[in-house]
Length: 89
Image 1 (tube, rainbow, N blue to C red):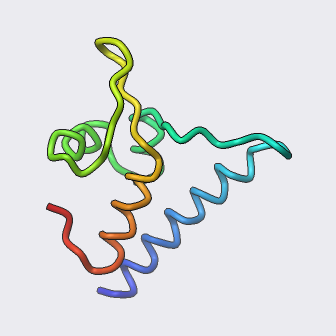
Image 2 (cartoon, rainbow, N blue to C red):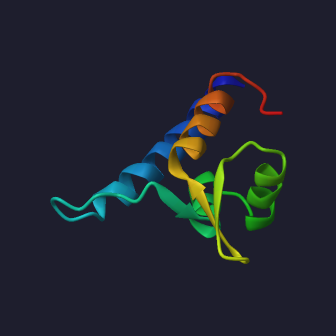
């Protein structure tokens, strides 16, 4: 079970490194992510990301009536809690 969690965490870390690798020198990564970007990072559905938002697991910022942006650090915090054996609520 621990190996499975470590494998999943490694896959997520690879995804983070890939995202950072696409940045040019001096370019800053946005602290906000789209719901689609979060779903890709977590390797889950967009619907599941919205469920996490509804449960308060991910901090968001509403931009207008329909645009939602997720704080990158809340995604990282969620990953760390999950990977350390904590069961997200």
